[in-house]
Image 1 (tube, rainbow, N blue to C red):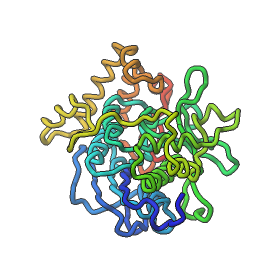
Image 2 (cartoon, helix red, strand yellow):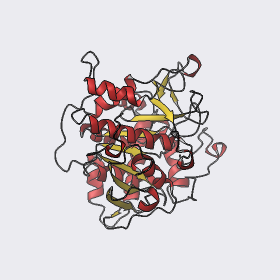
Image 3 (cartoon, rainbow, N blue to C red):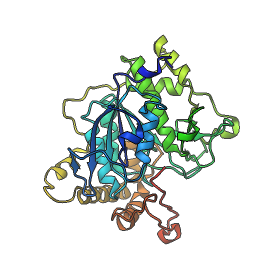
Length: 378
């Protein structure tokens, strides 16, 4: 990584969807490029004053671009508040759509929902086509548990590591039937030396750090695509120990080696997931069918429209699980199970049943399907 820390991340805009931001506490100076508050209905207030009642988003912003302790203090931020007031799915989708037009090149998602939602897939794919690297946390549920969209193959998913060089016990994972780790892609420690007083544990903190690292890499290699940045991070990761291979797909992140690899130039022998087409101005990161419904929603809650669409998509998935699985090109999320999970979210979670830390406290036995809904504050 470059020695000129004050210039780290210069020229890069990072998107962050979380609980909001307190610009003073985050110590980001004038680096806030834009802020949006997305209400429980899904609508945004363009002129809302930056705020953060929870503090989670502020801590992540500080890790990314804080002037004293941030990884990329010269980067600018576009911050959206999407998770502190409930109805997270609709607000997250609208936040991603907003960021698609903000000129960001990295997006940090230190959040997640406890099952895969098909309505997020077009958004993730649209952001990839727009050459935007999405960094998402895997969640704090431990081995075999994960949050979405950290399960999606189109995002760089991160988990947490301890100082002893092992994956943290609470760090989640997605595993294939044979035990292979599919997600997270890489893991990293939640803090750096000299930052102990400003670090909080959790895979969300790691997402903030890795998003900051990605911003620095995009700054020093401005011609590199999002796919090449991700490739450099994964290619230079230190492989896990044999008994840890079920916890992380590639290994422990090594930012300096990734920087060196990018400056040397991508190795042509490695296929890179470079976007094949460029987006047209104003391209929305929303499924076209859903976008049509949203456009006609008028004053109706966008949340209700999104959830109705998600329920219908879930029923379609239940009727043709093999066809849907083939389209996803991965075993990470079995959409045939989505109706049960979405029904639980609709009935118990999306109706703003939140306190300051937990998305919903629904017992797995009550769901009678083995589902435990995880905290969003990861």
